[in-house]
Length: 261
Image 1 (spheres, rainbow, N blue to C red):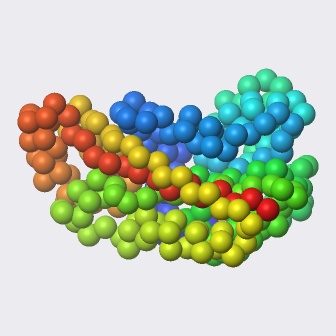
Image 2 (image 1 turned 90 degrees about the horizontal axis):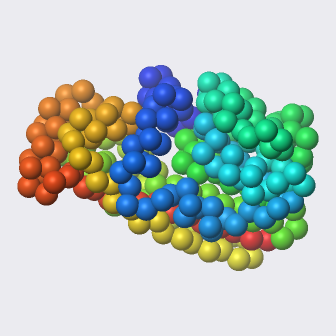
């Protein structure tokens, strides 16, 4: 597994159960609908061919397949076999989608040997690319797979991120977590400006409002920066905020960059 994390942290980063909890809590308590926000900006059209890298349990793969319709296709991959199986189960009948288990750093092999579609109108990755050790190589493969006039879209976390900031008060947060929130401006934008004729950047602003401290701790347990020693002080901090404000609120923002040939 070619990732910036190792061991238990790597397993948590790609774990299906952890991902499903994060998705559930985000959808329940976020001020903005990320899925709708992203789909509006990617604007997949009927008949388009889409590549989804790091697809997880299909949060984007499924709406991509619905938008592309019977004349289009989606080729998706994820390193987690259980996530891929769940994504396949969730596909609506008749959807033209191939979802496979593969490391994103083997993307060239997946396109060449495993996917039926080889060239794409949209190549996409959300909340995934920064996990790769060789991000530039993965991006090169994605970009090289574009059709003329195609677009490449990457979404990544972006500061400020209130849960990370809270965790930093009570524990040591891995540098990889901090770096991923600089990934958009420091790595993606220079790459995209060199590679693509047109580059658009969209900033996603979101506030998570958690009604109980239990929700906060449940969310925190699914993260790559969880530290059991920080649970008690974080819980106390959240409970104080909930008594005062009715909820524990924090920003959880994102960065979307789209490059076009």
